[in-house]
Structures are given as C-alpha cells and as structure tokens.
Length: 313
Image (tube, rainbow, N blue to C red; front, side):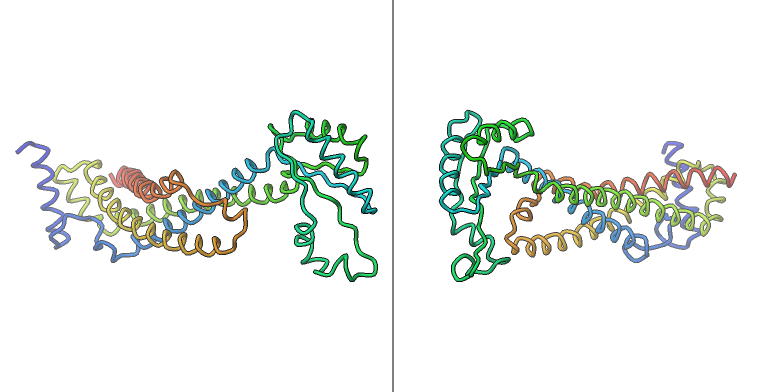
C-alpha cells in the first residue's frame, strides 16, 4: 500500500469513528433526503424552463425574420372601386417587370373580407348604408432583403401607374413584436444567470454548514496528516453526487412542464408560436444544464472548503 493510500485509509477510519457511520462522509445526509438535492432540483428545473423559453423566442424571431425578410405589401388606397381595380392591375403589371420581384399575388377580396370581419362585421360592404372602402392588397416577394433602398425603388416604379399605392416592408409591421421578444430573451438570460448565482450561494451555505458541524472530524483528520485538498475532495464528491441527483430530478420536472406547455401552445395554431419549436441543438443545450449545475456545485464546494480550511489552521 502506497503512503497516499495509507493516509486516505486512516482518514476514512477517522471519519467513520467520529461520525459513527459506515460511510466516510463529512456531509451527514443521505442521498435525496436532505434539502440540498431538492434545492438543486428546483434551481435546475427553473433554469431549464427559462432557457427553453429563451431558445423558443430566439427561434420565433429567426423564423419570422427569414420568412418576411424579402416581403413587401403594396396597398392601393383608393375609395373609388373602378379606379382601385385599374390601379391594382397596372401595379401588378409594373411589378412583374421589376427584376428584383420573384413573387407576386393580389390578395382576393374574399380573403380581405375574412381578415377584417372581426372588426367590421360580416355584412360590411353589403348591407351597410355607407360601406368602408377596403384597399387592394398585393403581396410582393423580393429576391433579396426588403431594405429601405428596395422599398424606394418599388415606390418610384409605382408612382406613375398607381399614385394611390403605399409600399411597406412586411417585417416592419412586426418590429414592435421583435423588440418585445428581444426584451423577453434578455429577461430569460437574466433569470438563468440569477438562478446560477442562487445555486452557487446555496452550495456555499451548505458547505459552510457542513464544515461547522464536522469541525472536530476535520481537526482529527489534520492530526492524522490529512491535507486540505483531501478533505475538500470529500466535500466536493458528496455535494457533486447530490447535485447530480438533484439535477436529474429537476431536468425531468422541467421536461414535463416544457412538453405540456408545447402542446398547449401548438393548439393555438398561431404562426409565430408554431415557429418557436425547439430543435435538437436546443434540446442538447437544455440537457447540459444538469451537468453544468453539478460542475458549478462541485467547484463552489471545493473553493468554499479550501478557503475555510485555510482560516481554520
């Protein structure tokens, strides 16, 4: 037996003799029975849920921006129906001749009536004494990004044939939504950081409490020649096992919540919501949260114990 193995055997025997148990642990609690594993489980569950929300919001923004990046909407705002139809046909012909235009569609009147029905009613334009004129709508898809320069080119091309035309980038309508989603993403990141700090604080307090409770054992181990690194390794291993168990439980709880929420949102049938589904890369990141939590707990425990042991000598 090497001197290192002999020393560790003496340390183990001292711990068993002082604690009166069969396990050489300075942290006197059984797995998943004390508060620490459950605290870590709660922290991991909340972190996974917050991270999943942030990833879903990111996917929503990326998908929406990709789908609307080259989209333009041309409105023919003309009260007189014959003039509106004439300008719409002229605008369609002019847009077809533009090299940057790769897609073009005149939105049917029935589709427009369906869109405005929740606000103006189903009988608008038929039984109303003074029907509200509905602008003609043309969906345009450009080969590139619909930036301000491209919008000005389309406006300049239409001004002669359709003076009542208004050109807007489809992505511009959702800018307030993008800004709100970006704020929610930052909130999710802040929650993940705060939960990581709370996890580290919980481990720090648990390690200090265990050190105070087992001070006599630590002094005996020092008398037997045990080093601070060997004592810290015991704490690190014990808290690491608790963190791993709590992380698995927390990830399982978060997974149930994410799947339930995903089914509820999928039932809404909303385009933006459907685009926020998680991919395999997102699930890989979520699966790394319990591992990161265990690693953070072990590092925190080791640093805390080593710092406290230096003060005890």
